[in-house]
Every structure is written in structure tokens, then in C-alpha cells.
Image 1 (cartoon, rainbow over the protein chains, first blue to last red):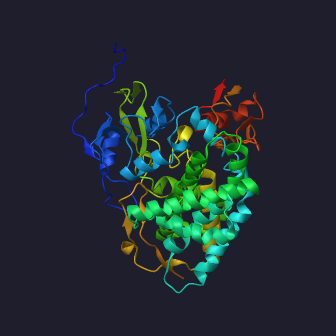
Image 2 (cartoon, chains in turn green, cyan):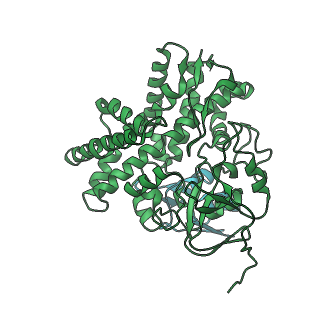
Image 3 (cartoon, one colour):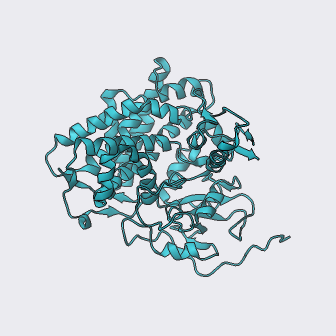
Length: 408
Length: 64
């Protein structure tokens, strides 16, 4: 039966996952040793379940591009990152938790709207939102919290525009979205805000888009897909919730941490101010270096698969760490150094495989416009506190700032 | 070289046009891959191989 030389024995003690960071700008140092050892490590998760841990860049890509690994949270032994996510992804089931062929059917309802060309055509609108937010920042008393007053509202304003939420509802939308996704909300508050926003508000908006279609994502989803019966109303609401949640903390934190990182590397910031054509390359390096999505990509094997000489049996769970893979010294020279001239060919901050981030080109365009605009309009922007006093939140699947006090 | 694309597998990520814009495009209708040239010259090989590697859905295959 065993036709491979793959290792089958369990190599040593499980690591309790997650491990806290000791430095805000690097994944936990413990993973370096794991990355170098040939055998795959094992981790124990929040609910006592075990999983194989994938930390090497090549292994990470191999797992995510292999359809024998399922992203379906309904699979027995699926390693959900937190109890909250387990519940949310069960209740609001969207393509992030689907395998082929169902996944492609759903994702394709959005691929045109998130394609690079469509996002490029949206740049004037993205610029307008960034300028609006900078205007608001400039009007505030200082010091200003860049995280709360720019980075957090920014992705919500963008998705509102793309979904087709009427402008007079933006504030309501923003407030509920914040509560729904905030680290300081209680579970009850988050669930209540979610119901008000998704089930009630978006539910009504869906009916409005059926009566009066406009040129926006919700109108297309309602009229091209829900009404002809390709997806249910519940699935449409789940998809909307995913679009709102997926790009929120990720974009907010990469935006704010990019500003922080550049302020901490003033020579490289000076180069970017002087040569804006360097910004796209710098953004790939910022994505590789910062990659705050630290909870790992979660899969269950549908069949026996060999990864890195290790036989992963059908039914076993895998946690694949993109942020650690992005620091693999076999693929990135001096991987822990931040270097805008690195010329990153392919990082895995957006994952890989069929679930690779739908919003990646939106994220890139957003970051380009923010970095291009912010330092041009506020050239003397600086931290309002010593860098060691900037606070972070390590408790969540997205590594997060608590605040980013700035002045100019 | 000969390039084959599997449009059923394509998820519209667009990494291919990033890597080899002379060879791959994205449809305006559905965001999925459009093969501009199935037999490009040898000068495109490195870019086409990069597109094959970057494709998250393994929808591109290249034969030399």
C-alpha cells in the first residue's frame, strides 16, 4: 500500500498555535527553526484539534494550488481559526469556503468587477475617496489617529461605492461595519450590527436594486444572478458580507503599517517621494514584509497527499502560514530586511490557488493611491509618538495596530 | 513554444497579464483569461513561464 518513502510518524511535540509575536515587524521567531527543519511540524489549535504546519514558501504554494486540499469549513476536522469564524462562515456561506466547481460559479459572478482592468478604470474614484479622507484629516485637531480616522474608514468607503450603497447611507453603513468588525465589540454587539447591516439594510437595498438597477456590483448580482436563480438571497447576502469583511482589517492595517514602516525607513521614504514610479515595487515589498494575515490558510486533505516528504492523510488538517512563507530565506535573500528595491517577483500575502485574494488588484491600487497622495499632500507627516510607543493587537487573525498617532 | 489555457479553471486573477502582457489579456465581460498569441516568439519564454507559475489556478500550460 505504501508506495512512497514519505514519513508517517508524528515528529515530536505539538506547538500550541498561535504563538505571540515578540517584535511587531516580524512573525514569531520560533517559526524560523520550523521552516529550516525538513519535517513538517504539528500544531494544536484553540479547540485542541491538531494540524500539520506549512511554513516553507514552496510547500505553501504547493498546498494551496492542490485541489486535494479543501477549503470547505463543513468538512469534519476543518481547522477554523476561531470559534467566531467557524460560526460566521457556517451561517454566511460564501465562495471563500467552497471547493470547485461551486467556488468558480460563485467567484465568477464577481471576477469582472475585481479584474485589474476594471479596478484601473476606478482609479479616479479611488483618488477622490483618498483626497476626501486627507481633507478630513487635515481639518482635525492634532495629533490625529491615522488608523482610526483614515486607514479604517478607507476600505469601507471604497466597498460602499463599489457595491452601490447610496451616499446618504454611507455613515450608517460605516458605523455598523465598524461595530461588526471591531476588536472592542462584544459578540452580541457584533452579531446585532451584522444583522442590522447585512440582513436588514442590505436586504432592503437588494430589493431596491431589483426595482431600480444601477451600474454597481449589487445591481449586477441581483439582476444577473439572484433573480435568474443562480444564487439565493441568503448566498447574495453572504457574498456581500464577505466583500465587506475580507478587505477591511487587511487593507486598513497594511495601509497604516505601510505609513509606519516608511516613517521608520526615512531614506527609503525620501526615495519614494522623489520617484513615485518606485511606488508599485515598494508596495509588493510592503505586502511581503508586513503581511498581517497571520492566522494561516486553513485546509483539510480530501485524499492522501505528500508535501515535503510528509504524507498528509485524507481528513487531516493543514495550517499554512503565508506570512512566514514570505520570509523564506530560500526564496528571499535577507528576508527580514525591508527593501523597496527588492523587486519581489511573487509573494504570497494574497495567498495562492483558487482562493487567491479576489481583491488583490483593488488593494494594490488603493495602496498606490494612498502612498502617492499622502506624502505629497502632507510632506511633513511624522509620528506623534516615539516609534516604541506605537501599540499593536496580536490577538486576531489579522495583526493590527491599536492606533497610529501622527502629526505634521 | 505552445501555450494552452484552461478557461474552466481560470479564476480571473490576472497575474498572467501582469507577467506577460503581450501574450495574455483579461476579458472585459467576465475578467477571465484571453490568449492573445498561442505561439509567441522565444523572446517571450521567460515571461510566459512566469505567467504559468504565477497563475493561481494552474490554468496555463507551456510546451517548449
